[in-house]
Image 1 (tube, rainbow, N blue to C red):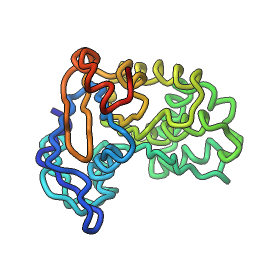
Image 2 (tube, one colour):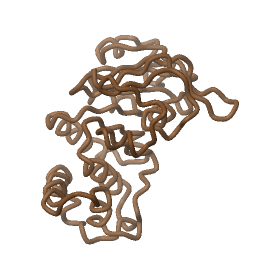
Image 3 (spheres, helix red, strand yellow):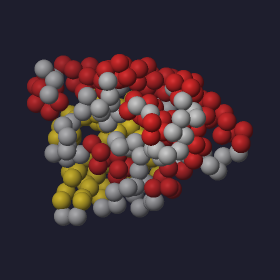
Image 4 (cartoon, rainbow, N blue to C red):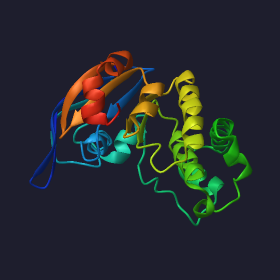
Length: 235
């Protein structure tokens, strides 16, 4: 088991956002965390990476407890987050954004990692000297993922990958997630686009009001028409 969350409760001041969440991700899996807006999906990822400190329960990565560690310490263990708002540096070029994510790497390692990113997102290769702020939404998302990959993660957290993107871009991300899985990267993703998420995932969890209401295989969830309609808005 690469990631194991047990009895997780999370809080924003006096507001409780997660209630006794249990979730696991095995090495090599793609696991999706689904639910309507405000269900607690982003909160779960923020808690894993250490951005939300007010929590109880256990978050173990490779058997080691993450709770209480700083975000940079967690990231150094092999976890990268692609946030919903991307947080790219708009005034820097594509290449400079990638360089920043690997600024302590040796020159040769930096070049090798960038080559892998450009192989996955060949469009970024042609845009490498463009200011990131001039890119389209889909291109910025590619850059955000590429920047996360520059840290050479074992576990990639993707928060609302497809939000605001055109259908043709969403389709391309299906192929790229498959390529990441083939490369041995484990993925935990949150999505409101349930159809996309189920197409790329092995297993699924459904959150509602901060609690897990379903866990199982993608096939099992597709068969639960009641859950698909009630919590995901899919008929």
